[in-house]
Image 1 (cartoon, rainbow, N blue to C red):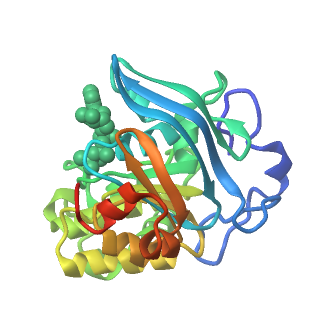
Image 2: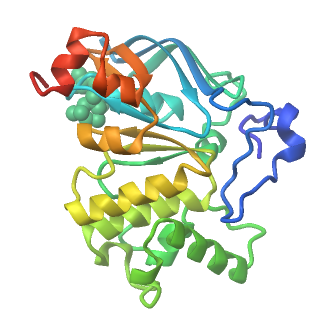
Length: 285
Ligand SMILES: Nc1ncnc2c1ncn2[C@@H]1O[C@H](COP(=O)(O)OP(=O)(O)OP(=O)(O)O)[C@@H](O)[C@H]1O
Ligand SMILES: [Mg+2]
């Protein structure tokens, strides 16, 4: 798959681009050692008009791991992940400086096609946003191109994505019902299925459990545990316990800056920065 208009996607790994695991999700870390950075940002700065939301973020996101982004409301968590797949720029007046490299590709290079990039770096939003006029099945398949896909294939893709999102058993008999007709927790898993159907290499999740009850939350966390074997996940969460439970690495943002970034165990047991400690112990935020 190409993310640029002109060049094949990562020619160094093109030969192994078809690598899939048994459950069908791409896990092609050819040429990357364990824990190597799949995404690297340098001096990443983001504005909404004259308002600076991110201030020079330097971070390496490890391949094949779960990275949690934490920090008080308004610190730039959503902006950060939206920069990674070029969703930030869809806001009028929004702009970015600095660089983001995804597998050595400059994400903001003029030849990169944001639509193709978003097929590799998928996203699940905080509020479930199924297309209300589409059926459950159509919702799952909404991100796939229509060309070159026969119906059987599409049925298989829908089933696989719904199974991965732990929703199949609950909706398999009502696939033609509207996507808006199921519960909020089910809609969130439907949106996760929609993101997984296009087989992204990276999944960005922006507070995916904030509107969910503990049972639905546990299902999403189980899902992250399963998906982590096959996909790189970046999850924004306000829930410290959730970050500690699901992630390998945690980044603490504060007022547009990356204050601390370490393995999750260190972050929660022995944070280096007093602001991190204050935040994770609930003294502010
Ligand atoms: N569309 C927008 N237009 C203008 N300013 C925005 C816009 N979206 C976000 N901001 C501002 O950018 C800053 C960072 O916002 P962002 O949404 O990234 O924070 P966040 O850490 O995700 O917060 P929350 O935890 O509340 O979701 C905030 O000051 C916010 O008010
Ligand atoms: Mg946010």
